[in-house]
Length: 476
Image (tube, rainbow, N blue to C red; front, side, top):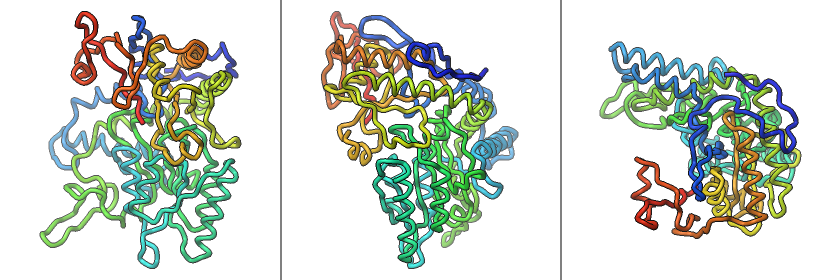
C-alpha cells in the first residue's frame, strides 16, 4: 500500500485523477441506477461510518481462529485472545500519544466513551454535579451526556473561531472568579457538519488556565489528523472505530487515570470487580473498572489494526489528499447557482474532509435520494445529530453532507459536483415522492440484493411482478 506523496492544487478537471490513499473494502461495489446501468458505488458518507480498511479486514480474518474468552480462561486460545486484546489496547493508546499514566478504555463508540466520562466528572466542592462547558456546535454525543449527568453550560459559537475561543475563555474565567469553576471543557476536534476545527492548542491552554480539564470529541478528527495527548496536553480523547475504518463495534476513551479510577463503574458486572459479597462490592481500578462483561476482542483488534495502518501513512500526504478533495467539493459546489456550502468560521484553523450544502428548491432528502438513484452516490441528509447548530445556521430543515477519507477517489468527488450541477440545470430524471417521511423513487426498478432482507421491508410489486425497492433513508 503506497501513500500519495505529493498532491497538486487540483483545480477542476485534475482532481479526478487522484486515487485512494489506502484500499478499503467495498470500494468497487456496483450500485444499480434507475436507468438500468451499474456504476461503482461512491461512498461520500465516510463521516457517518467509514468502510473497513483492507488491512483491518485481513486482521479480523487472522484473528477469528484464535478467538476465545478474555481474562477468564487458562486455555491456550484464551491466553492468546487476552494477549491480542491487551496488545490492541496498547496500540490504540500509542496511536493517540497516550501518556505513561493514561488509561485506554475500549468502549463501543464515541457516544459510549462520552457517557462513561460523564459519570466520572467529580462533584463540585459544594457537592453539586461537576460543571461542564460545551459549545452549541457539538454532536449530540458531546452534549446530551453532560446535560444529563453534570451541570452543563452551553456557549453559543461566534462568527469566527477566534471569537469563539474568546467566548469560552471569558466564561471559564468568570466562573472561576465567581467561585464556581468548571471541571471540564468538552469540545469537538472537528465539526461533523463542516469539518472545521478550533485551534486545539488555544483550547487546551484556555481550559488549563482556568483550572479545568479538556475533553476532545475526536470522532471526526482522529481518522484524518494525527493527535497526541502527550504533545498537546489534551486530558481526554474519545473516538470511534466505525469512523476510523474499523467498523467492528469498538471505540476508545483515552485519558487521565484519577477521574476514571474514582468514577462510578460504567457497567456493573463480571470483570469489573475484585470481590463481591452480598453486602459489598470491591471494584477494580484501571480499564477493568469500566469494561464489565466479555470484551469485544475483534473490535479492539480491528481498531488497533486501523490505528497501525494510519500511523504508517505520511500525515502530510494524507492531509494533502483530503484537502484537495475537500477544496474541489467546496469550490465546485459553491460555483453552482442555488447551492449553499455551510461554513462555521471563515478563520477556522483547519478542516477535515466534510462538506455540507443545501440546494435551493430541493429538500435534503430528495437530493440524497436523487444522488443515490441516478448517480450511485451515497451521502447523508438531515441534521447530523447537531440540531442546535443547524437551527442557528438557518438549516433547521436539514442539509446534505458529503465526506471523504483515505478510500475516496477524485472521480467520486467529481461525480458528486457534476451530479448536483445536473440537478440544478435539468432537474431529476426519475420521479420522487415522500412515503412515511422518506424520499423514495416512484416505481423504483432497481433490484433488491439477495439476502439483504429488503424485499420484506421496502419491496413492492412492479410491472410483471418484479421486485423493486425504495431508497434506504440517508438518516436524520
